[in-house]
Figure 1 (tube, rainbow, N blue to C red):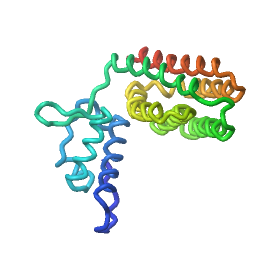
Figure 2: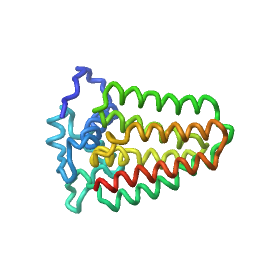
Figure 3: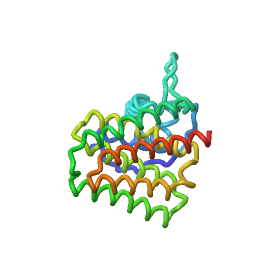
Length: 224
């Protein structure tokens, strides 16, 4: 685990240190550098990150809320596991709430939102061409596309629900290694969805998104 650079400033706030610790631990979990069931202690993380235990403790609490870590009855914290049932549940939920964002969106979709989705795909394509091995960065970009889809409707609870699921989505992709063979396929499916959104074909867009999510789920399940 990389040690964050010291600023030497006493003014660094607890919130800033908490976020620094949270981002560092979260990335290591998502990249599977901290595998499932790995025990996490404040002492070890504090030494590795050169951050005091108080912000480490707060970061672990946030990670536990996001289901990236779990705490047992004795108070010990471990990296959570991902089961086949978890993947099934995640796929079913995504297949319901993501098309709902399109159903609740106001049509025609604002041109700026369409351009943002196109930009998401463009950045993904560039990454595949320049760094085809970078699954983690691709997973982040892929999740950003779906986050922007969730934001099409004026429903912050729905958007927050997907944001809550996003770390698990990224982690599942990395754990199962299902991104690399299907990166270009996923981008094509994204572009098809944008095609329907841009032309105001709500029902087709909802169906395309649902089928895309189910296909992603099937690819993951096949790898398990």
